[in-house]
Image (tube, rainbow, N blue to C red):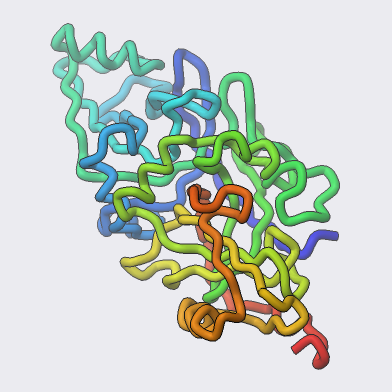
Length: 309
């Protein structure tokens, strides 16, 4: 019944502390890597390389033993978790051995069995299932956020996961996976990723404006769809939202705003207020990870009556 669609991703398996975790692939900071793996190119994520704590570590293997998957350094629930991973390339000096934890990778490097080379590459690979937890399914499927971002449980047998798919201006369909606002994450039905706040500090985020009142619609706060400052796929865009909330001073006078220019004009006319984060957190903001797996014409205005327009 919710005013949203859905999108299915292929799952990928990784090892964390000798157990399996599962993730999806959405974005990458290097254009060649993004093109090869059919991901969204997000050059802004390169800024995270120079900031300690802004990325987690993902180890990939040039040659590998049978059954080897990438190894990750953290998972949701850990204080250092962020889905922005700096890729580290592992090369064995001799016969590859199966490694299933970061500790094992580092120990093998110390023993001279392999070398580890950090890459100038940051990827956005949200974790959807990990030892002891997984992203939640929303059994009711009526609200944009609700009990969770999934429309069905994580399917390990089919190696796929299906997310709610929301619309956003301009021409975007997005999913929601995690937020730097760790205390608010359970209320949003997603996971906490505290270090993603660092991405806002180093310019690796894009502004997103969410509407707290005005015209009713499919936005996460029950109003019109949100607005990105830049269109996905352009070099200035990022899936990591620097979250702002717009409220109309006179909700009855609200109209559809579809761009940063529309928002600035309404602000200059003193029709709206803008809050960093949400009104309750202002002036402290937060970051939300909302990858855009596809672009499509916004259909929200089609649902409005002539009176509402």
